[in-house]
Image (cartoon, rainbow, N blue to C red; front, side, top):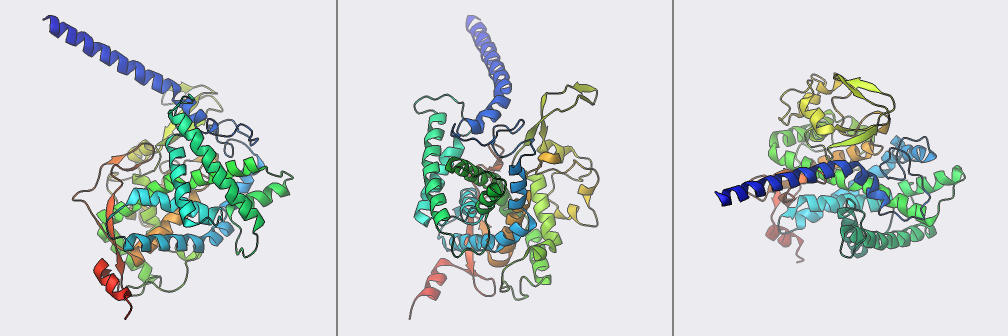
Length: 437
């Protein structure tokens, strides 16, 4: 009896400790979000950290000129200039995946792909592949520790994040200086070019530290969430071969894919992608079911009432994207992957303003959403046109939501090279074809 009593006391103590831990976690969660970037930024940076920005220097509830700059960076004209480069980066990556003799970890490789896209296309850096690989490893260490408690102790996540940031910014400064010295041969203006020129137009010569912080945030914005969505896209095409085939049919109808199977010559254009209605439906459905992040914070500007509860002015509230998508009455069979729900015949997302919000909503909607959708569309087109791939495990992996949505084992997939008729080229066959006579 005594031992049973002790076990009961121990269980109650454990439960109490868990409740206290959860309470403390909830109490500091918002502060951690606000500190997540400020804790790893250089204190000499003078970029504004506006109210409601959660510590990010370039975004927030502000009419600052930087928001105008970002609208240029993600404008229609800018996206049109990025498109050929994005396509080339994706094509090179898929060729590398197909030439790999073993299955690849899709989530890890998608992270490398989005990082490479940000460096090569968005920022226009000409960094050697070996240095780019090292920079990616350092960047991953930085990202993994962004959410650490700001306690500067040896071997702490915060200390590792600070050290990674210092190493990362040294590499970025070297790349920026080389870029500023070499202005010849550019056939388009990348995001960093626009940032620098726009700052001069507004009489705001940016310091090297501000350029490094701006560069780091552009990489951050283009990295984790896009890698998450890319992995989800590949997994759903694997799970639903009928969707992949229907997408190929649309590509054939639009002259992007020959009836025999091989892709047509030439690069894509925004107008061409805009005309691919089913492709748009596929991307929308991926983002509905597999939104990379769970939600966001907002500051209440005016006291209001919601379902009988009064929400005071000045409070911080969190909205859930996933819960919204799961409970929105406009979506039928919410757990079913069904791209046709976004077709013109059904248009389930058109009933109401805030039932579908994978990129947030209102004036604080994601500034880079058009770039993210463009990247996903090009990836889907290239996957459907030039790739054959199959799951390398017996079952599909579980999904975890932290820090962004992704498969727990990264999704193991084997990619194959293709001949002109889109037949698989096995590694031994590929070696024979490439052998010299």
